[in-house]
Amino acid sequence: MRYLKILIFSFLFHSGFAQQDFTFINETWWGVMTSVQVSEKFAVWNDTHFVDELFFIYRTGLTYHPKNDNFVTTVGYGFLRLGAPNSEGRLVRPEHRPWMQTIYRVPSTKKLSTSFRFRYDARFIQNLESGDLADGFSFNHRWRFNNSLRYAWGNVISENTRFTTTMLNEALFRTGPGPNGVRHEHRTFFLSQLGKGNFIYSLGYVIRYINTSPTVARINHGPVFWVTINLNLMKGKQLPTFIEYPSDHVD
Picture 1 (cartoon, helix red, strand yellow):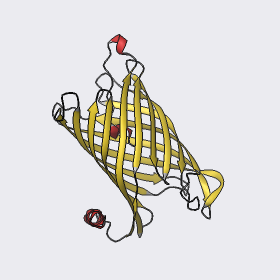
Picture 2: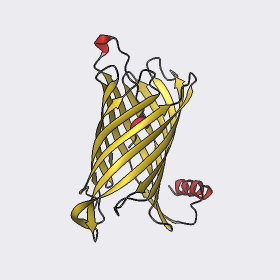
Picture 3: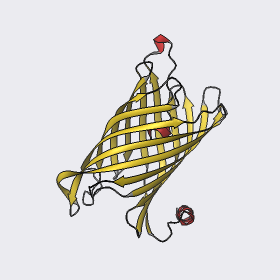
Picture 4: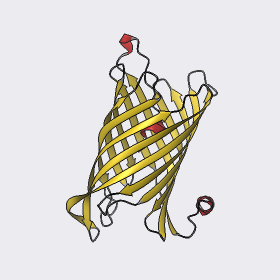
């Protein structure tokens, strides 16, 4: 673990953040992400994500897939439970989060492909007072930009499985009148993915740089375990199943 922290710190030093004081926190990120195709152009989105003592989120939405599937747009709502300073690890703090996103998938016929995602979160988070829950909710905007690089290795493990590796970078920024939420966060994911049928199993590692103030930052890092499921209720009409990637759904 000591060598891992040195590696992470070296990465941050070269990124220009070395003047801050860092706190390192281990985390494990679990996620189940689903897309259910219900028509020629629409799919229903349902996700859950969980990090112990930090957050639980259920996110639902409706996704529009155009004919060429290069620009994919989703609008929806998320409900969260967050930790609080005095909650002793319990997720007691509610948040309501209307959201929308658009993904641009760069056309590619090669094994290496890339996509860009913009997501907007409207965050209504319950207030705190001296580390405990207080009356009322604050409102903030969160603007999120990510880029995903995927390399499809193909059926290198077996004829019935697809092996892919992905690197995902996401920058998150907070604006708005409310005091809740950090002003800036950057996330980097390294994922290995095994696809079989409608399922994609992702195992990887995440490093989250959380900028709490100009002089203090937190580094959350740890393993990632995700399952992504793409289902099609329109197979009887000979419609191909929409493919949505884990990087499309990452919370």
